[in-house]
Length: 498
Image (cartoon, rainbow, N blue to C red):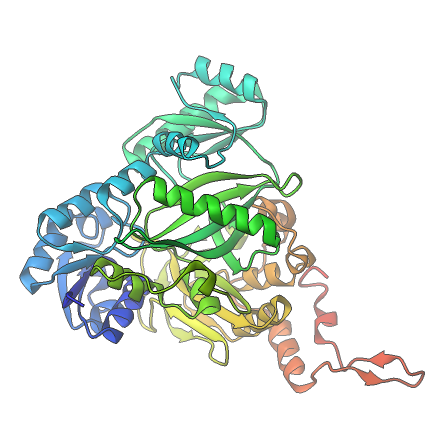
């Protein structure tokens, strides 16, 4: 490998993840940190660490020149952007390469094209990738209203230059469109510096399914199968799993083919994700967007395939060719990821701040924790409230759900309010267990039930302890019928839905 030293232009769990992967490849690592992160784990674990400014992200992690100066000072020869911050900023990718450094990600042109929702939609249509029925053109209120009437309500207003749920509004009635458009424009302008909107048909019970793509500079583009990401709140994912409970082999093959075509249509190189929405009734699928970076949920793909995606990002950036043919990639078992946020589900998922007084993270077979925090660390309002990701792998989906429930029961982030108890609710809900949820399911099914506090309720801990002591294996009853050992979950019907 012709890379020697990698600067990680990020923080938190993803910075630690990249540092670990680079070290395993024998590379030296450089962390950057704001004043608020001077003693954060990522800053302490790298071989070198460089301060880049005050706590607010615009004054530190979003300063391109500060990041390039850090790379120059440490003689780094590559920059990995992680996710968030500048990861999908084409100006940053271009500045890195113009400085003579290797950008660990796709070409700036691909980032720019796929970051513009209107342009991406046009390119996908030209490549034969299905897109949601919609409208892109003059976005004054009258034009949008006329287009919405033609498409049919409900419709979805989206920021043409954005993603992550920002600048997005669902409109059910014509009279609501002007106000929704004004709000979407304000949010899009603030988030992306671009107030343009486009319009799409809104699919009420849509599933959100994405395909991991990996492509090298030698013309090889592979898909690494799908991830189901439909458990969301305010368009932000909180639980992801693979394989998707929705897809059958035929639908999986067709979506995978479309994902590869989408990546090839923009000359994509490195790791990326093609996101689709799926109508579960018609089983039609539509291109949603392409994330031109590593995804938060990439670990579940790693768990079922045994491939280190971050290492292959670095290998591809160094010019190596992918060693597999598509048919050689076969996932094994089932993996689920739960995102641990410092937020309060009982109060609209508002972020929570404070000092972490105690951190207890789960261990055990098939359990992986990608964490960005430590005890004694201050959780500030300056950054995304993601604390960690708990990932489990098992032979079957029911086994993976059970493993994640036990892992969450052994998880403590004392000092801030977290969503741990809420995640337990999701996993225990019969809809989730049957795999019949959708992107608005959290609001519709769990909206009134998110009043649990930030700690896992004591009955849950007690029930899980009982479950460990009394395995529920079938035994012959008096009449020859199978009987079960004590069922601790029966006592939780007042806490979790049955």
